[in-house]
Image 1: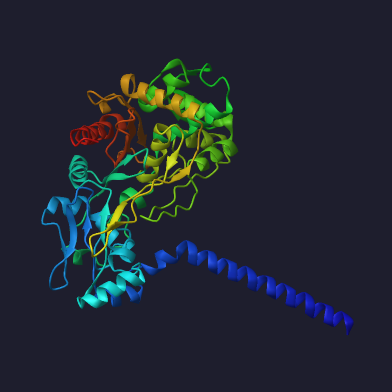
Image 2: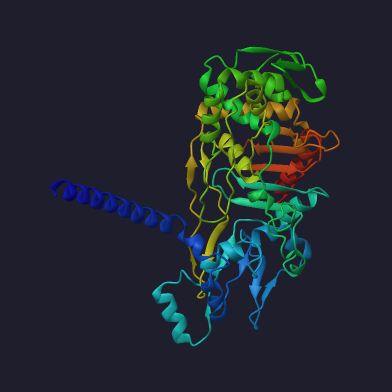
Length: 469
């Protein structure tokens, strides 16, 4: 009998502990994901609120109206078809077919869910239909449209950020869509080739040589003599039964880390990766946000992944951004921003401020630090390496007159079929505290990052300069 009572007490304690754990987990889930659940387009409260509240406007940082509600309650978008397409992934649509745009992600503000009791009382006594707040975004519609057009006929994405504040000045995904003509995409939301997929935040791409930023950062952290070590590139590096090659079999000869970075030498970076080991390389990638679950208040960003290889040859390939490495363009822009910002990675921001029905601004943008993946000293060394890559390396076509630009090209193989062209990458920044801009560009199946993506990035930066950024 005594043993039976003891067992009952043990079981009761276990059940109470499990119940307490479940309660804590539910509380954590509500605090972490509650706002996202509330603004999910499938939430019936959203449809109900739309019938009772006039949705607020969505505007760009300069006051250009991107979406508004007419007198009949219909959602109306900018009359400029080019702007509609260029900013389609940022604005989204009112039907809920896209879930990552401001129409959905900021419904909490646009539909007045966040209104205070005082605000609701004020609107109640006026007798008019309730109105949500206007959302002023950080993006520039002119810069965004220019970036979208520069992508040409390629699928892909481009992101421009202020690396000191995290403000997203442009975020475009191609192909875009017209919110007035979405019926053709019904049942197409899970297709990765669909215009409804925001490639800037949801597209997980093989990074190719832009990942060498991570490998170089790891070398600077773990090797006190990283800058004086020398390597010999013969164009081919046999590793077991595998041969790690450089682009077009190019032979770089004897070179140090800075020069290897400038000319994007695969042999050197594969050697560094294999010497560092999988654990160190993975740890460095995770400092920069790989394998992290991004939870930002302004936008939805898919996680990037780095999987530790078990074979030495796979480790070599992963160090040059191949193997199973995957990254989104926005995350790659954040990584570049951290280097440019002396080692401080800022949270990306898409909401500049809100305007309530009485015309008062609130919830002003507050820059927030996401992490410090590298020291200021190592960040400045990487900055110099990136500037060298543009001045006398593979990124030379990203130069902009009057600005010192640093960057890194990437040519990411996406198939063993030689008829399938690689994805072209370029990430870069302006080395000037008065113009704290960074950019990331990816063009699907375009070929060389140096010849295809770098000129696009240069065109975007030139426009940013023209606009006063």
